[in-house]
Structure formats: structure tokens, C-alpha cells
Image 1: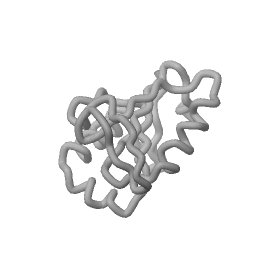
Image 2 (image 1 turned 60 degrees about the vertical axis):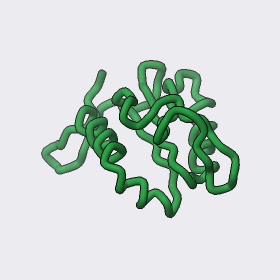
Image 3 (image 1 turned 180 degrees about the vertical axis):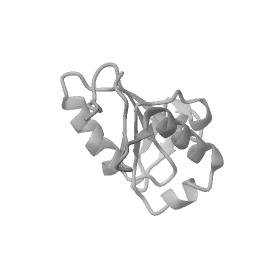
Image 4 (image 1 turned 60 degrees about the horizontal axis):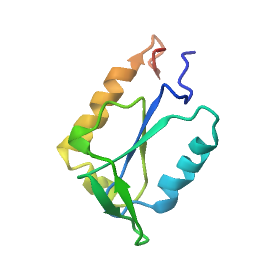
Length: 116
């Protein structure tokens, strides 16, 4: 199986949107942060700057969806509002482009990430 483990050479994009769940973002980030060679994390949102969570506190987006570099790993926080976020073509296009660059179909029909 191809190596898809996190590491210093891996880039993780965390997709923020209005109404995201704090625990769905920061729970996984705590796990990634505990790794010795965790990925480089970039927070992406509708625009650079604060994005309101469902619980009230805001998290800062480093870059806008449209300007984000293609990541190796994409983390999308859950929330009912996620469906409305998917109505934004720039978001779905960036996620699809990142996935297409990193995933390839195998003979079994399962998607895998190439090494390197």
C-alpha cells in the first residue's frame, strides 16, 4: 500500500466555514500536533481572517479557498452547514483538484495516494 502517513513533507489543509464545529477542527489538529513529524497545517476559509464556529469562538483562516495550494491531506470539519458550503463552486473545485492530484484508481476500484 502507498504511504499516506502524515509527515513534515505532507501538507494538511483544514477547511473552515461559518458554523464549523470547534471539536471537529481542533480535535484532529491536536492528534496531528502530537505526531513527531506532523504535517504542515494551513487553515483555509472563504477569505483570510476569522471564521465563526457554531459555538461562537472564531478560528483564523490563513488563506482563501481560491488561493490555497493543493494539499496532501484535506480535513473538512462537520456541521449541518457543510452542505451549504458545498454549494460554493470554488470550494468543491479546490477539493476535487487536490484529490485528483493525489488519488489514483487501482484495479480493485479503491483510490490510493501515490508516494512522494
